[in-house]
Image 1 (cartoon, rainbow, N blue to C red):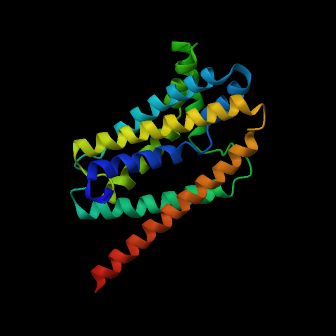
Image 2: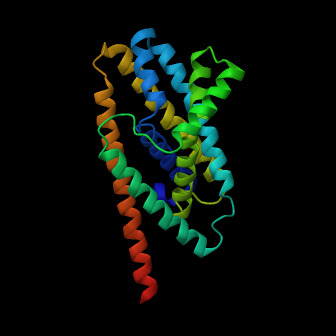
Length: 229
């Protein structure tokens, strides 16, 4: 079974989280939505590929930062509670959203960083555009920090280099697959794939986050009950 192979399980967990994370609203999905209808599949997909590469870099940084972090049980328990609260908040926020653009406090800082990077680098290719937009989005890094903490605190990704690498690889495959499907659907949809469709996907992603939070809450309650008796 897959649970008996921690590296394989980490890869599957990375694929699922990476793919589902892409459903959340953001400038990349909106850019692909606009550019795919106007300039075709290849241009839209290259934007997504650039975004996927930067996503994986942030993911790898997050896992590297948590190496040896969960050796202490109190730290592990604290991160479980923190990730539960964050996922619950995020899930409700996106499930109840009325528009694709859900503002957050990191938006202003991300816009300033994006403007500075654009002034210095001047991205012209589709790949560079996707890469730079994710690089400037501080919310992506914050989200991966929480997701990495969630995966490792629940031992879905163990503290071995092979498991972390497998998870990052799974994230890349899941992310690229989503952007491939989105780019193809937009370029072939002739306007049928709209912001309303992205909003529905955003609601589904919010529901998935809520279910994950509920799962974490059940686990926390079970551990508390076990230690109490």
